Image (cartoon, rainbow, N blue to C red; front, side, top):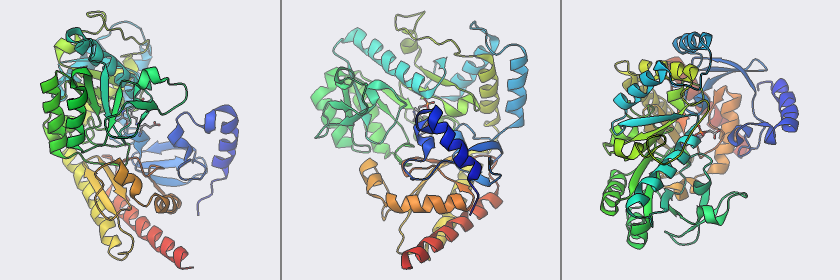
Length: 440
Ligand code: KE4
């Protein structure tokens, strides 16, 4: 049982200083019901907490650390940029280099704007979609999103569905008014008929669909190809825009993201995480005719003091250069599959403990459920209570998973097969311990 003394002391102090003692809610471990761990350093696939405990990391800072922590090339590039000043608030050649690379790698992007977070990328893309579609039809104000998809803390998207399928939404957080969410429709994921119904009822008013093309915020949930194809078709028929929120899937599930994996071209794409190499970076991009609506070329306003700053560009460019190495995604996929197969083999001893797994190369997930999870309702129906107990056992065994059943897990190039074997052993130890506890 690891010693968490210093983490607990720091957390008690942190709770006096920051809401919940954290700078982002999920880090507080609230859904698990234990205190969070404070970390001191990380290298490759390993995390080291303030009490000296070592963990194999499957969060990777929620996606950015696809090369592993403290990548030496990213460090070197960021330090070199830093020496020339961390920010100019003026154009730099590095922004040309970085944006040219994103345009080269993301199939649907012809022009891109750099911002400072995934949230900022999404709120800008939503504003841009409405600006673009309302030119030809001012009635186009509605946005479709899906239950279980999270797109950052963007007011119009922090909503829960009202009763029924394609209904207007209610704010999911105080401080957000109904006037902001009344144009948001929330539909079930992987439900083509609900999507068709929504367009039948509101097609003329739908400005855009925004979707996680592989869900990473409701647990890891794969799309049915027909679902993505239906979105593309309905948007074309109704002159609505399709926005792929690839903040998590971009450069994670394939070099060209989910749009390359499923060969579906969105009109706009949002990016983040991997493209920052661990620094605050987001981006939104798409067809040139849409992006030229953005100021100063077009009338849609969006701005940012540190957007495209040289340190983040140097780190991000190094990251998206290194992942172009031949076989990079093949290796990530093989590691995720190896880990899942090892855990499934262990599960044969626990036929009373059903588990399903999802693999999407550098992203994967697990549910304590009998059958594969296709949408958020089914994710919620999985044994989330058992997940909490399992989580604590794995943490105590030195495995750092996402502290919620409604998150994805992340593989990195730095994970070794020894890490994976240790994780499989920890998985077996956790299930045995929990079976013994249940029988006690
Ligand atoms: P950021 O503003 O956190 O950079 O990105 C928001 C965002 C947008 N779109 C998708 C698909 C995302 O997954 C995210 C953020 N992901 C969460 C993890 N579930 C970040 C972790 C956190 O909120 O602390």
